[in-house]
Length: 427
Ligand SMILES: NC(=O)c1ccc[n+]([C@@H]2O[C@H](COP(=O)([O-])OP(=O)(O)OC[C@H]3O[C@@H](n4cnc5c(N)ncnc54)[C@H](O)[C@@H]3O)[C@@H](O)[C@H]2O)c1
Ligand SMILES: N[C@H](CO)Cc1c[nH]c[nH+]1
Ligand SMILES: [Zn+2]
Image (cartoon, rainbow, N blue to C red; front, side, top):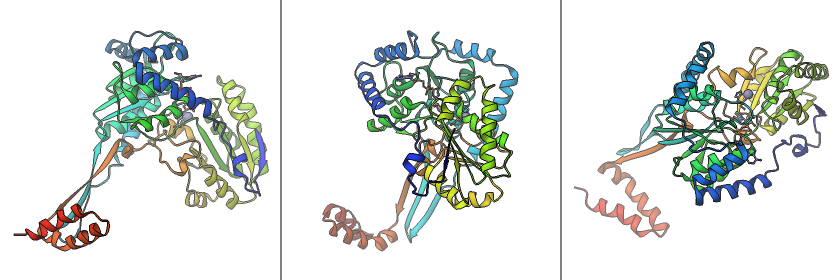
């Protein structure tokens, strides 16, 4: 793990570089696949599924029989764990319902705002290196609470054309309406354009590798909304000598094992803690089944020594981590002064894994510095706000002249007339 000191020159770009920042080759592939799916539909999706997922499929839709068989293959113990997590996620997301806002801006001018669910949503569930069924809880639970009507799910099949039973079980449990065996760019293109076999959706949600993330960004050019760019996982831990080095190392490794392009960072004022964590990582990584992946991610990662808390906070806000653990004596300072982060975990007994699975918060979060401008998935992500207004005679008398003057000043006579006519015809 590369060890560096706080950059007095503030050359952030180099120091805080993500391993995923060169996307130009990917963009070319994504554009080509999108064009082909748009013009040739399912036939091309099948070709790319054969190329990337090494399986020839007749149809993508998962059958009822497959879903029922999957349920029998998931252990009762795991079902109970999923149910506990679902409960907490439901509680936290249901609590995000906001009150209807309604007021009179001036006498006789009533304005209000109401939320409506997005009718057709597409959930992408990663499946390349691990079947992330927990992501279904994070997306389908708020979609159901919001009242979305069509909730479709795409996930890559294995080379026998199957989907992991945990994914099928969780999807059914959480109210997904249709499941399709397609992954990567071709899945995002299918949901963007709609084909004979895959419905078009209005908004696409979910994390994925760089191909998926770039594809989601391209989807927005064709009028489909997305939750956010949620790419390879990241974690930044800020810790002092009150932290437990073994715990910190375990958290860093938990995100490093996601993928070779994951990145983890430890920021500390304590040289001893940096040494201890480096040692712990070396010892804990040896026994991980995904050791090879974690080692590559650790090679992208950094241990950063800072001189004081102000330097630490400046660096953290500049990096804008997806996940952020605070293990500091003066945690309040860090909580108050952190502006850019996806989700924050506080104290020695709050592992990042808790948010990944079961505490109730959402794990679909902005990566690659996008926490500067995007929120993680939440209930509102599945809804739109609509505004309403009703103006009485008293209201139009009060507001009318201002509208007339402004319309005239913009040279828009028809706008002005719409008010003048009413003012002249007040009974
Ligand atoms: N930010 C978040 O909220 C969040 C949450 C969970 C997971 N993640 C991230 O999601 C990612 C999951 O990635 P994954 O790969 O396991 O699954 P994935 O489903 O995102 O990607 C697999 C698909 O990639 C496509 N693909 C593979 N190689 C390709 C190539 N050379 N050209 C074109 N397409 C290709 C294939 O179609 C395959 O089906 C990880 O990076 C993980 O860190 C992020
Ligand atoms: N840490 C991932 C979000 O970046 C989510 C996840 C799913 N399963 C385990 N972890
Ligand atoms: Zn994780």
